[in-house]
Image (cartoon, rainbow, N blue to C red; front, side, top):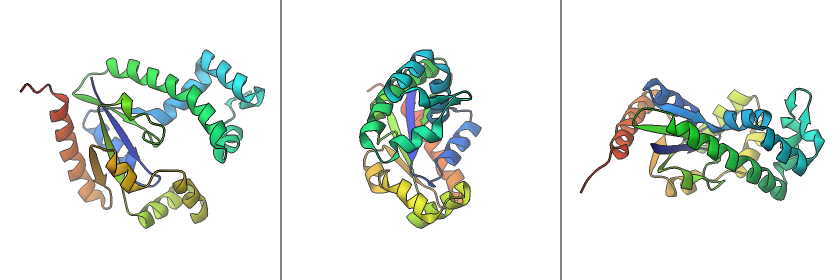
Length: 199
């Protein structure tokens, strides 16, 4: 199965692109929500998290996300430890899921695909980009967050230029009308890439 990684910074509209691909019948793996589910449901993953971060990592209602986020946010070492536990489990889950899908290709949607060095698990990377101001506006509107909070999150992510350099395809998402056409073109290209081509 041909695997495509879909990534983009905060406010880029990556989820919108994923939605438009889903509308075309493409199976999309949302690695963020799957990671959350696995952290709650996978017994060995839970054990590893407790062993690494202590009992407080889970409350009666499940993963204590706020506590964990605060713990790793400005602590690269802790974040690395968290990722070392979670990413392999998510990648394994994605691989099993991908094999069960039909269609020309599957998509793994991940905000931190490149930051986490997960591009080796996919055949091609698509970056969704947008001008910085537009991304700020979108993210502030969506999350009800302050400009400062969004800028802080942006600082922890790659720039669009860095993303574009490491991606096979890039989509610039400014106007929705254009986005529909761009996603249609992207879909055709990926269908073509996914087919075996014999020299």
